[in-house]
Image (cartoon, rainbow, N blue to C red; front, side, top):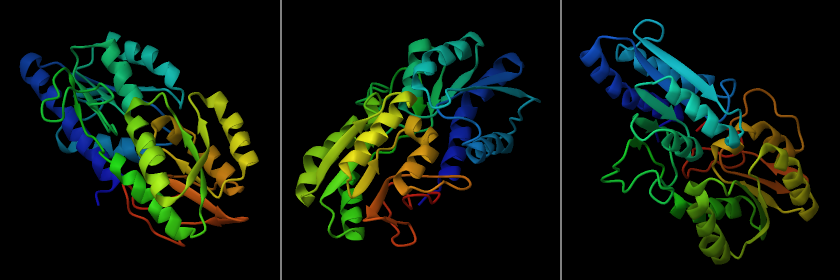
Length: 284
């Protein structure tokens, strides 16, 4: 399985093609706009992989290209203004991370090429017309995985055989993961006789504490966190809530965390491969 750092390096290669065209056309320094949903402190290794791939292709920040970063710091409502700021800088290409960032960039420009790092469902999210013929000014990568939601629950059931009730934390403002949620709710959970309760919707950072309180009162056996760049930006708080312990070091979370009574099911107890390699803290 490709590691995420290698995946981000491919993003650098994809972002490089408009730069070569501009250099041949004008001889001027090229400019990349980078629209991040989380923060640079949470993604330094990914940014370095992106920059390294650009360097491998002869595009060096500060020498023959300029990279302009804008970070939403886990607040999706900042994305439209940040995207507009980048467009006003007239970059040759805009790189985005996640569906909300790509939608914001699309609303800000229909002419500047946009390269998205990933989108769970770019067609249903309205980012592209189809995977074969995207059309418009957006290209990039997708992680097609709604059908794998059943496997995520199945693996969790294997880790906790008595599992019957799971809490869900997700961001319904991200249109790309709606199909993931619907698949888990309507197909996977009933097939495994698992109740999804409570379902906590979090659209803004100030809604996290209330979501945590709702989940804590319900005392579910496990927690599913749907993949979303906004929630990823606040993964430390989510892990500390789910485990009841301070999160040490660089917290990297994808997927599912579970409890057995007061015991947290940790990744060393089971290793799960779905869209990511490990759950609850291991780098994919």
